[in-house]
Length: 466
Image (cartoon, rainbow, N blue to C red; front, side, top):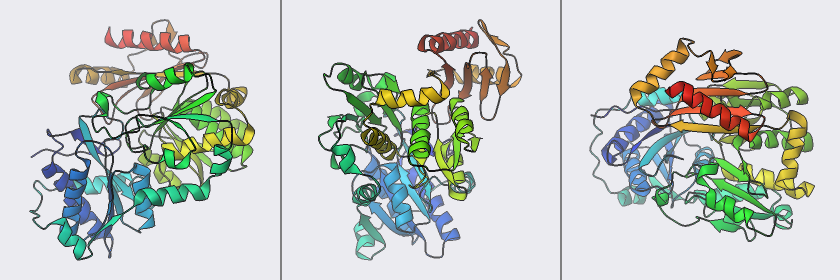
């Protein structure tokens, strides 16, 4: 019997090792029991992304739900995580299930839980479901077609529901009639069918079905998007680059010179546009690993700010109960006011395209507006694949306060909300934290220049590994 634990964002495991049909059914049974315990009319929405076995695992989940008398809405074909979240709210379901491992390497699949509000389930709900996972799931031998004919199972078009929602909330004509040329990289993920429906003649990369992602983890980071960057650099036109991850809830962008625009810059751009141009207000909620430049902008704009532990479920909790303008993470998961409290790489990208279309400015020009407020900065991240014993040894040293300097960089102060953030002079910092979704030690860094952040991260790596 495999012990199943939910991490930062759902349960993830390697397909055919721990991620099996039998184990998925165990988690599905716990989910079904939780829904029945908390809702007199139990309903669930289930979707899956483009990963290997997605349909198989989604149907296994649906079979368990129906066997327990839970009305089940199952997506027709692959969908993004935000589509399932929106569908969960639309159909009044107690919970939503997404079969996805998001940005993880293609050998993984996963199981995310979504709340009735249209965003990640709260940590308390996730813990309760986890505690209800049985050692072995009950046997289910009834065909899905039987449940469908009996009305307990219903196939739904979550993609069209989402596209209609987008059309009601964006001036797509302004974007499509502007001079913006968009190159969109779906990374073989669940955004591949949506963007061509919304934009006129985008340049499309990796918008075909490939459940192995050609061996590349579908995470929208600069190091994974060389083809998109090269396309922009070699284009005679001013092209804006846009990428989303495997389940399309994370975003990365490129300016017209092919320079990567990371999540920190995107969060700042969203705050700037929504507050200064659209005159929207509210609290800004960001994860501990996000740039301190966000605090600086919030102070200048008179917006309250709150820092949470890492994991979008903590941000979503705030968005459900409070008036939040923007909530975001370093990893590219960002939510905004006026939409569901969910990360959404498609929605965020459209806001920035609208920003450029309405102002007639390029990506570089709107980023300069942000720099005029908070100053220029560069961010990067190292993912260190380490033996578990060494990883734990480093974390223990952080906990004990052993690190006073990293090369020439003297530690001025330390924060430990979730991981360990070491502040130096001149707006420079690094942060050390084990990944909650992969067997990695992450080292984050920020400095005023690209060369500066590279030097900082290498000094940190040398100090950590000796």
